[in-house]
Length: 188
Image 1 (spheres, rainbow, N blue to C red):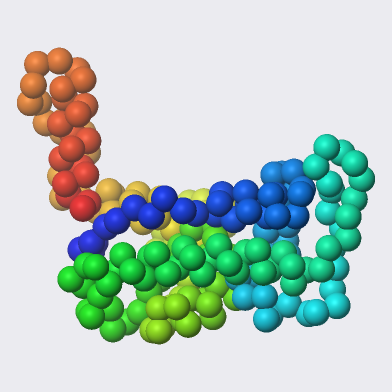
Image 2: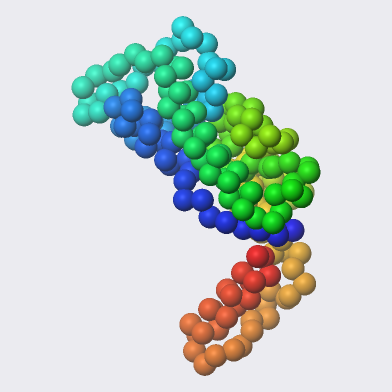
């Protein structure tokens, strides 16, 4: 169950922005580069491998070393993971993380992310994949959807009947606000 929650305002979009700015390529190309060739650890990339990327403004293509792309990603990932580690250390639960850390979300798909995370957190790290559900399993079985699937599974197991709305307050907005607040309180 969730015992601590915090928001870190840095994510995969920041990596994409860094790639676009540092390599002077459009954001759509930066996102594709991150997904196709992205590594969280530059040391894992072959030194003599290159990739062609478009230049901003449609001025043709440029050939860049893949390890340069990885260096841009690694810098942002080190910063992000260090911020997360510091936030965890501020909580009273840091010393209780004996089983380690689970990474979810699209950024957890970066090659080398668990290795870099092992270094930063100095504890076991693994990727979280949605499990124990049916239906669209072949579509949502990815770390990208772990949080959403987890919330849906949690909601489906909730003891409170879904069709029973709590009626506190006079208007529709009050009822919705109260129900969202009650749901949030149950989760966090």
